[in-house]
Amino acid sequence: MPAIHSARIPYFIYFSAVIIAAVFSWSLIIPASAQAAETGISVNGDAQTAVADANALGVTWVRSFVSWNALQPVSAGSYSPPAIAELDDLVARASAAKKKVTLTVLGVPEWANGSTDMRVAPRDPADYATFIGQLAARYKGRVQSWEIWNEPDEAEFWHGTTPSPANYAPLLKASYPAIKNADPGTQVVAGPLTGNNYEFLESLYQQGAQGSFDAVGVHTDTACGISSPSTFYFDKGRIGRFTFLGFREVRSVMVAHGDGHKPITMSEMGWSTTTTRCERGRWAGMKDAGVSEALQADFLKQAYHCLAAYPYLQSGIWFSMRDYASEESELNRYGLLRWNGTKRASWEAMRSVATEGDQLKTRCGDLEPPVIKIISPLASTQFQDQIYISASANDAASGLKSLQFYINGQRLSGSLLANDVLMQRTLTTSSLPFGPTTVKVQATDMAGGSSSRTVTVSRIKMSTLPVQRTALSFNVTGRGLTKKISGQLIVPLAQQLMPTGTVWLRWQRYTRKHWATKRASYYWVTKYARQRSPAAPFEFIQKLSKGRWRASARYTANYPFTKAAATETPTLKSARGSCFNKHCASSRSRRASYVLSTSV
Image 1 (cartoon, rainbow, N blue to C red):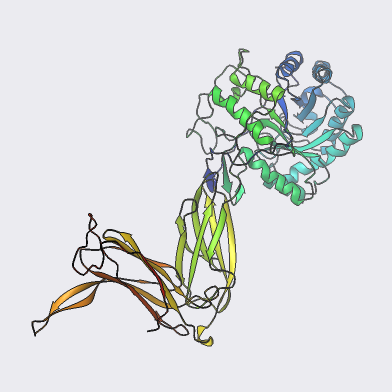
Image 2 (cartoon, rainbow, N blue to C red):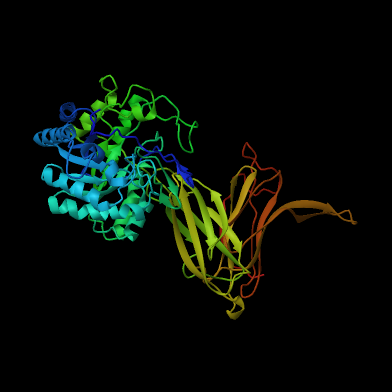
């Protein structure tokens, strides 16, 4: 490998995600008018071969590492002739081929950092700024983008001091004017960052780095990644840093600080094809470190398809053109070309995307939260000792996972549910203070995305209200011996008031009894009974035996509500359709639906 092209050794960070969601269905439809991210390749090897490979692929960008310590090993005033000649050759060939060039500048000479470790930051950021400014002047109009260091947010590439925004910001702030004064039309990139490190970027803004970069760079070939571009997890409510789609959070930080007009460059993306196990971090020895060659090619196409949905993604640069060594390891198997120069399937996948564009029509990542529908309560609802909450939710892409009910911020009920399944709960509220009460329904989908809706209702003293006349909407349905009582208590102001008390549902059998007189008499005897809240719709399903039965509902009211009752006598049929006993009035089953307003 030529001296000026420092071998890329990615730093892999392993995470403990709050929620990990493997989403294999894609949900974000790519707009037809979306501007696809430009393709690119991180090159290694000699300049002639590197540019020839880039030409064969048809990519737009060529990215290369520049080692300051190789170019100026002795002092700031002198270049190493072989090293600068090689870099000149690369830039000249790429420019002649009409390729855009991004250079990642790191590697500090001993005279600038006092250490034999080239990854120790310079003692004076101005020395680095002077060097990169000289290069920008040398290649004015031919290098389109400059990356200030490589992954300065992690210890793999930032030595000597703790990798932090406070330590990196001075280097970025010193480099920006040096580059822009030399070549105003070129781009200065903050980072690139390991993963989609939006927290580091947020802190970088706090360090006053705003105005010292034209774009933010991210790397997604991290964490022994073997999941598809549409797979992601949520961490503290945000898309995880170590997922392909985590750049959305980087974008959110930029927008929050008024930099929404600036692009993001994904200057490293890729999947290793190693057959080894992950060797570092939390997942060491616990998962594979690579994917199959076929899957690598498939993920490449999916990745560019995902990027096409985001116009602010300027470029997606694959890491790397060639394997770095023959030894089987994760870091040596990212190439489109194998170590022996033969092509992997990902080569053709890249050529296809670069020359023919994104051909996929599927969806990428279930990033839209569930849609919630609250049936009850309404914003005008008033209640006292109990409240009825009814809601459902739908997530078309990955499906609904759960619904949770909260009152005044306290979780009171929850359940695992499927799409559009109604969740109903009647909750006791006697301990709540009187006045406005916030009811929240929160839904979570199978990808870990969540949404919520709130309704503000009022807890009041019902004793202050006038008498409220009630009625029972009452139905008996069913086939054969299995019958269902269903209905609801009706209140004149049903949209506003939730009644208190109890609804008793009973199945009574017409039973013969003998008294002392030996005279046979029939009486209605309760065999099955259930109590339900009057604030919610009710039902009671019961399998009955042969005989004559009566269904009844009775509301035992609390003031200001009046009592109500309803009764229905269904006809039971045998399997053949005949009556079970002589008391049946008809051989055809009846279905009753009454609203009885009798006060009892």
